[in-house]
Image (cartoon, rainbow, N blue to C red; front, side, top):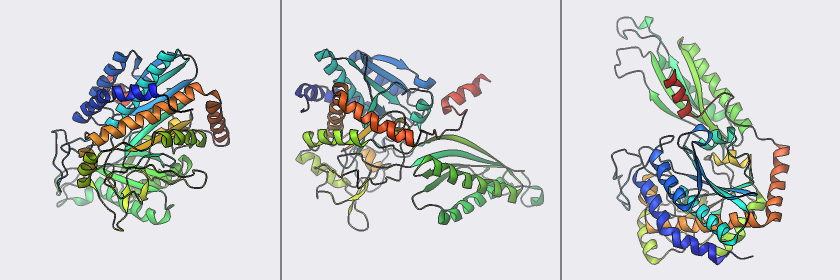
Length: 479
């Protein structure tokens, strides 16, 4: 069965409206848990279309859902909107050095303004398709906060937000067009806080116990650990507090934010336990104390080959993103190469490409024999463990543009980005309609999902009792 022209026509008709929505979110980039204006803009668009909106899903102020239709099956289309700190860049600016475009310093360095806009566009097209054809079934859009190093969806999953969903569809902007037949890494993130004793560093250093020394020893110990951990694991950190600006005071406090990744949750827990021991050893060596507060985490992606094959057929039918010569010329300034001279894909490692400034083809491969690992992470992983999930990626930026870069930000409002977003909406909407109308397809996807989760049940990466940071803050204020 071919993609319905009515569905594609709706997306083409609404495309400019949702491109403007994504641009508005690009113009006001908000960090994790703070996406209030982005949520308001998306809710306004959903309510104008007649969706029934539920705010504060899982109790999180910047999470919501928008639902249309009735009955089974329930098909979710998942979106995001959070930005990254320190990546502000003027739209279209490809100058050699960063050229900030706003006062906040934030920027849409992972294209989540497009991700949310494209997903809501797809959900709107599916809603109109169900209405026009009098079909049963429910389409539900999820607006999800804090994907960047916070895992908003993991908290939503833990609170049961996806429990009644029969299957889920999503996408990600990138520099290639493909069904995302990839593995991702599970991770945990935690604050590590050392507390020592202040003293005069010149007169009575023996009275002091340096929290900064402890933090430095922890970092050194973690760096030694890197030689003795699996090569597909990752450890990252940022120093948040060095204990003050005066070198003549023994630092009584120091804090770092650690992120530990592994191919699965079990491996992540094992590696994080080793990092925890290093922190405790650093505290023991310096006679300080250490507190470790887990802030969030996510699971690896559980693949669903049935859904990937189905989406792949839709992608083959729809073809690549329809760029024009102007798009290609504009993207030329943003192309980067690796040291080997090969083009670097932002979402899937290196690939040979098709020689142009924008990827004008589609990448296909057999997931049964090849499933590349993207050594980043996504909280869609947790969604994939509670319902069958499938994703695509579409070319929205110049080939080789790195995610989490100002070059990504600069291209986020260009016509090529809008075309990639609209094309993704077509892939997602057609896949969602297939799941709503083809009972056999959905049953096969759920059978595969059930088989995999029976063999390996879902294991939330979040410790018992942990809640989303905004809810922790609310409790702290109340107390």
